[in-house]
Length: 168
Image 1: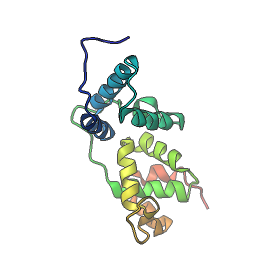
Image 2: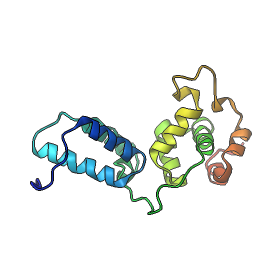
Image 3: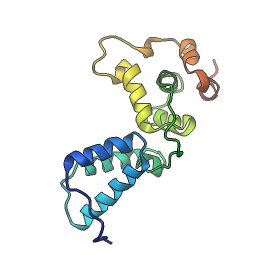
C-alpha cells in the first residue's frame, strides 16, 4: 500500500548518501531506503541506485546474515555506533578464512554476530588490511602474518576466535 502523504526526493545523489549512511550503521537511513523502494515499486519506477543496494542486501541475507543486519535497519544503541579496532577485526577475518576454513561471507557473518560490528566495518577492515581484497595494495598486508601474530593482533576477540580455530 502506498502512503500518498509520504514522499521522498527523487534524487540519485540523495539516494547514494542514504546508502552510505545505512552502510555506516544508520538504521533510520536503512528504513528510509526501504520506504523509498516500496514507494518506487508501487509507482513502477525501478530506475534508482537503491535497487542494486537492495539486491546486495538480500544476497547477504540469503547467505545467512540476519535480515535486519543485511538491510542495515538494525537498531544501534542511542550513543551511536562504537568505534571498533579495525586491525583486530581484520586479524579475526584472516584467521577465520585462512585457518578455520570459513568462506568470505561466513567470516563476515561470524564477525558481525560475534564482534557485533556492522558489516560495513568488517568489509572496510578487510579492504584496508588484506591485499587479497585491496586492489591498490602492491604487496601482501596482514595476510602474510602467521597464526600466532594474527591471534595476538585480534586482541579482545582472541579468545572467541580461538574457539573456532582447529587445534593442531
